[in-house]
Length: 526
Image 1 (cartoon, rainbow, N blue to C red):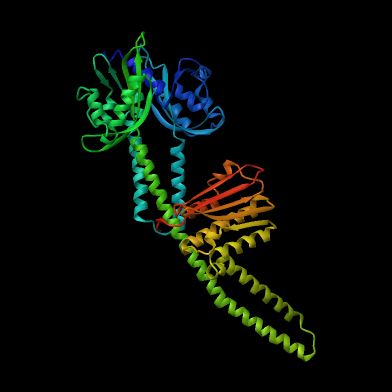
Image 2 (cartoon, rainbow, N blue to C red):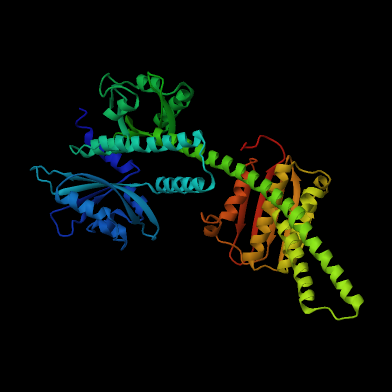
């Protein structure tokens, strides 16, 4: 009986899997597409009818310089399966990374005249790997030693990715499309006959539960038993609702194996009706997403380690700026002041003698004045003394007026009276000062604005900082540019305190930078 149900199972799985599936006829010129599933259309933007008769190369959109194409051609010549990564393009021209698997299929006579391919959009995984790679390179440039925790997190992430790929490769089986689809996607299917209470499960369902395939007779009670106790009530309620309302449903739950390990799955159920509209059978699938959840956790830990390191580096830089500014003031400043004093004496002596000052003496006096002004500017840029002497609010007022005056901008500065008499701790003060300084510097450099407003007010137990300009604005792509180190630094500074930074605007309508900084709470210690 289960063999008779394999075709409906295959059709349901192929129609509902998130992976695109395509079959090509290798007997015809250019190996045209003769079948594609809905997931392929959702992934690429091309309809199922539209792609019939096309060669799969249309997905490359002219991007033919891809070394993996040679591997694909070699595998097709040898009638071998292959798994590789390709750059593909959707109908709208957007790029996505495609994890492509090809399998030769045999017809009734045993001839391998067809090829099945599965497509999986792994763009986010590629971007995550690229982000991790960039993070590691930056980390290696900024520090000489990595912490043991970061090394362990990176090693764990690579290990999980390698294990997932090995597991997927081990599931390749060309004997049937159903087995291929389920093994490739960690997708198990099941069927429950309402009248007889008989339940059938594919091998992958047993594997997800940590059991040998077909080692026990499956029942609905057993299926509910494997659901994690914390998820069991909701799972049973959703199952009953699906049966009662005769509807599909999708949800995520956890499976608790006999050995205590937990697997995360995405479940799908459907009620099958007879000709009279009466429910006769339930079918469904379980998709194991455990590795995806664990990879997300490792990525979060890695990002947290990078954030802590960034905060530590900022602390070191601020202390170094302060030290250098003090040494320049005490050493070089004193020397220049002495030179200026001697020049004044020399000028006075020349004046008393009744002779006109020597041109070189006048030039030396002018250069000394320029040197003193330059030293003062460098000291101010390194560590404004107003921040240490008068506090954060006077420092913000000073830097705002300094930048806007230099840029010829009209400044509207408002600081809430509720906070102006209360200073911040040193760590929050320097972070807030640098965020405001960076935001106003961006307005000066890029906004092409004529006026800017800076408002700081208290909202509950947090500070809300709002910076707006009337310049050329920004697009969504500019806001999320990975290469925008200034914006990245601002986000890292505020993220250290559990705060947030939001940038909004439209081309031609100005830009708004909104910052929320908690006034208390646990910070991410460096």
